[in-house]
Length: 127
Image 1 (spheres, rainbow, N blue to C red):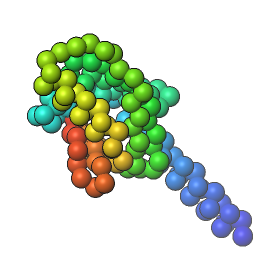
Image 2: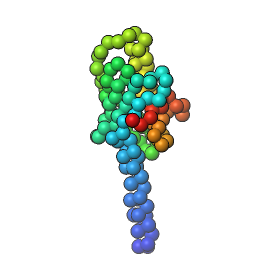
Image 3: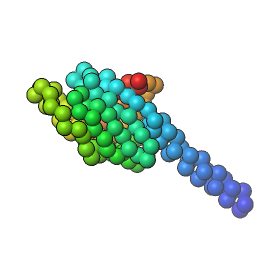
Image 4: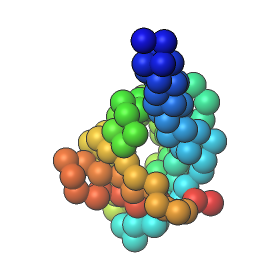
């Protein structure tokens, strides 16, 4: 009985450590868009489940939540209000909207992939 209890405790500790490794993979990392459409966009994952970046013209910031090893929810809560060319402003709005649809991510070497409903919507490379 003691052996089984020890094994269960050890398993719980190991599995608990796995989820924190995911957070460490993303926290403190800064990425630049590898998507041609949003080539000037960046995202950086800060402490306390915060993120910030540049959408091409304006800076933005928000909160993120990791649900397990691959699920993520991004909530953009604000951005600066600088003006720019209409086409670039429209791309920026689309980029911010796309961030809000992200429900999963994958880190592959220096690349960060964001997915929405199983489809890759954004790709970044580590700076």
